[in-house]
Picture (cartoon, rainbow, N blue to C red):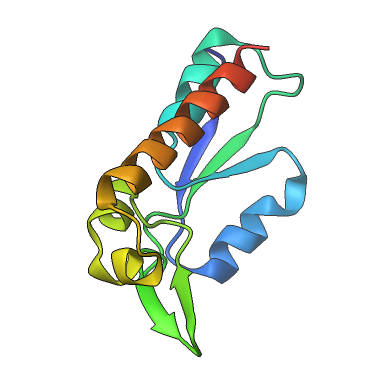
Length: 113
């Protein structure tokens, strides 16, 4: 794995400023991305990873204006366990977990292409 800078952004402004060089990738966990970096399969390797998990308020799940809003740093486990998510769609919670798992598997498969 090549060397890269890691920034723990404290605000959206700080995260946005770090994106200016064009070789920066935002992460909010980054488990999939770290695996991709280790496998060295990106066409362009990032110079910096900006972690937005450290930006306050990006891990929220809330209903607002009749819509369910989720922040970019919301953990999948929190989405699957949140009652507002279950209320928004009258499907069993296990179906949400299956859909989340399918999404993760698809991402992993695409990363290997």
